Amino acid sequence: MTSARDEVLGRIRGALQDVPTAERPEDVPVAGGYRTRDELPREELVHRFAERVAEYKARVRQVTEAELPQAIAEAIRARGVWRLVVPADAPDTWLPEFISPLRDSGQLTHEELDACDGVLTGCALGVAQTGTIVLDHGARQGRRAISLLPDYHLCLVWAHQVVGLVPEAIAALAPAAQERRPLTFISGPSATSDIELNRVEGVHGPRTLEVLIVL
Image (cartoon, rainbow, N blue to C red; front, side, top):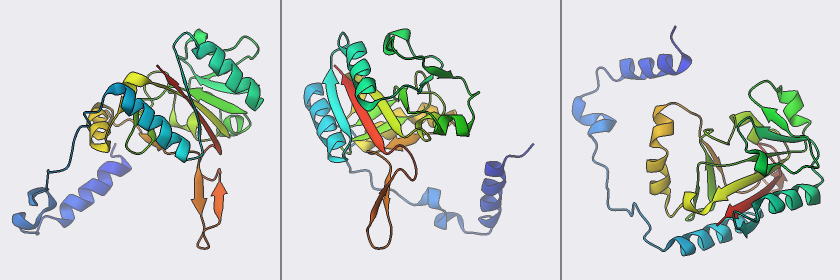
């Protein structure tokens, strides 16, 4: 059975059959003089990442591994989150005793997710250059829908997951891309603007993003 993606790519290849080889995109040289790695010490990368995340009006806090359970509980209690969605493989240590989380393994409908107060996930990596968090929807991240529909997203980023530059992030995400897993790039809470530059939040995802960086 042919997927829509394969059909679209097949049409593109067909349209390029009569194009001279020298004019095809894969034969056009690409300049490679840009930086592909940031050599800053890990501590400085994490500090820069935290600053850039905060610039997007996201809440960000740095905690130790030992402080993480308490930090999660404080964030959830302060937000008033009682119906919390978590990935099916979220560790029990993430979950405060005062809530009964909804572990999602794909069974929750979009309507049920939308009715939840928030979601707690891990991530694949963070980019210090742009303050972007990337989910490849692997371990402890859940499927894409759970990070898009609830109005509040509490995301955990470990210090070792922070890379310096966008090219580093793209290289690290290559295995997920080869497996055709979805990639979600998060730069602050969801926001957009109309032609008059009126800012509207929550159109394409959570209106509130809170990040705990685990040192």
